[in-house]
Image 1: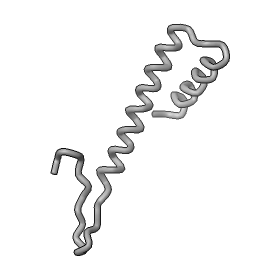
Image 2 (image 1 turned 120 degrees about the vertical axis):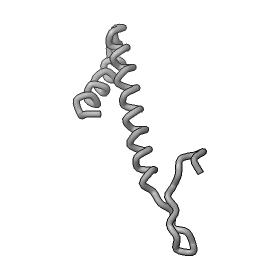
Image 3 (image 1 turned 90 degrees about the vertical axis):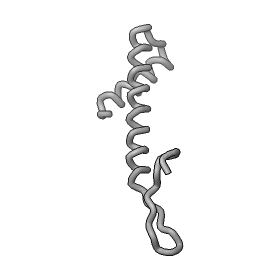
Image 4 (image 1 turned 180 degrees about the horizontal axis):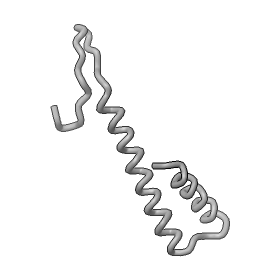
Length: 69
């Protein structure tokens, strides 16, 4: 997600709190928020996929997604 889209999310938020949003703006806000959430989840998933756990015996086990043991 680029800075322009994040800036637009913030603009729409402030407009919503001050004067309200039109239906078109509400749809845009929902779309941008959904895209933002997907981006955050993908970044977190990527970080978690790169985590390894060092066991007491010195071996290293990669952290696996739930259900893929």
